[in-house]
Image (cartoon, rainbow over all chains, first blue to last red):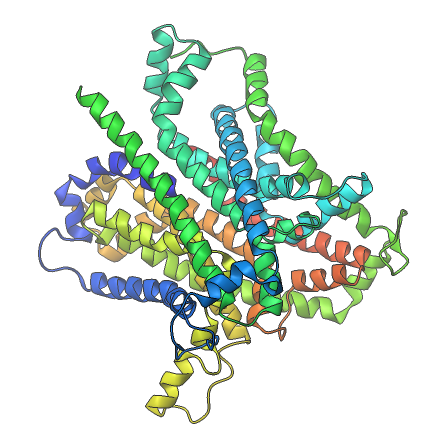
Length: 301
Length: 292
């Protein structure tokens, strides 16, 4: 999805210049059609429904020790955050948090590299490409729990120990890679082949054209793939359930908490994970902006 | 043009590029699926021990059980309801952002606004409905205060309604993103030409926007359908154990170590999913549309 964001400015700036076109569907001044107001209302309601519940739990996570799961809010303190990271009764939140971050980073790196290469491969048709493509789609739509169980049984049959950095890593990749490759498709469909051909005309080798032309041009899209990989892994539950071994990842920990813990600790965890996500997205978007700024500066100079 | 390499060389290059992908998918997708397939033909001692062999007993059991039909009907009900709502909301949100918001930067900003909650844990987003839908939740408090109801509504949380709400909450983004993506690429000149030719806004919607967003709709549908049909924890948590789906039954089976029946029902579900997805892929060549 961020691929769209990254590429929007350059691909759509030219389109938005044509005033005559925008007129009919969204008139450029005054007299908006009634559909505008209807759809704007729908959009507003959607956003409220999207954020409303989450803001409730962020607010409720700052209650004091008397706090419950519903409003009204009882006092305010950081009690439930402290509770989250100290008490044994809520499980190993810190450890699972650590593992989830590490796992997500590994998954991200592998997803970016493999998706990029696969994207390059799928640009031209080759014998058996449909087979690989459908295998990928299959991996995307297969029920996660089933695949997780299969991977777990496979490891058992081979006498290997399931753990978060082996079986869970593989199980997560079977989900993040198809997403990554599909995003790569969208990203690469906007790559202008003229640049690549120019590189070849200037005597670049295949690797030089990839390394010096494609990667810099596609960098924002690659960041988007990375973002996808990170968040999909960080939040992956069904595929990790049977494959994580004895040590939990964060979603598994949250899952067991929903079964045992009925205190605002749960909400505090929601607040913490959201903050982490925001840091990751912020860093990624910052990278995209930086890349584009750098590029703009170079183009001017 | 770069010199076009010989077919065999380009085949080799293609395979080299996708080989890392294949090297991950074979052990972690193909092999596990085959293991599940094999397990579905095995016999069990009822304590988690598997006896290699070939018996169709598990399939007979699954297919003969009245529960199976009930589970599939429940799953299909959730899938269809979720699909309809996410499609309607997703399509119009994307349409609004692409065609109604004049400022490009604002459109991107609003798009981003829709994607942000996606980065928070699914499970957390699911529990976040408790303070709203619960018996003492905000909605019930408001309804009581307004005198609309005398007793708190119990149907809001831990019900089929709550399940559908949670699905729509989590999955609409999977519709918005691909539809937005394909709509944003519609050449405005086409629409201009249609207006010049006297098309109404409804005609434009029917004859241009919908057909040209079809790859996005198809992709979104694949995401939503496969996620809902493959899900179990939304059903489990949001229905409070009152409803079940095919995968939640599978999960229960695994919990009591009934691997062969679990595997048989998993194979069945996978076949159903494959049928649905290939039907979608038959109508829309996603790969063609994405890479065009």
